Length: 126
Image (cartoon, one colour):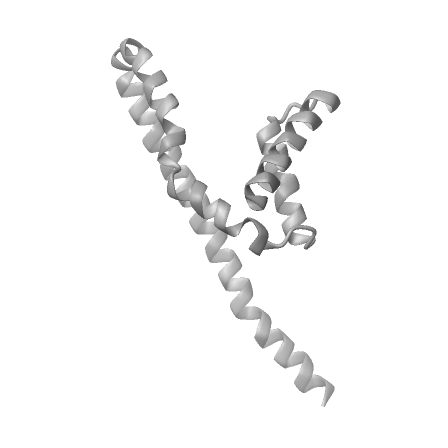
């Protein structure tokens, strides 16, 4: 119960920050950023929220029900623009995969080169 209260508290904190500071970012996202920062800064321990987060993750499909029902209201629009929507979804997915793959490859190359350069520095110092 404590973990659930912590998660809701960060969500509320984000909503308040959005309303008070007039930020263009949704309050839920601000709360998530604050919660992540609190986890990294060890203000909140993972053990405090782990069980509640697992429960929410396990039943995550329930959170999508309103969106799925809302999509049904737009079925005529989806029928008219189905091809354009499908092409844009496939294209954007392909672009995201290419960018993520190239970034991962660059990070992997730098990580594999880093120990060799450190070894070179260590051997030069001897």
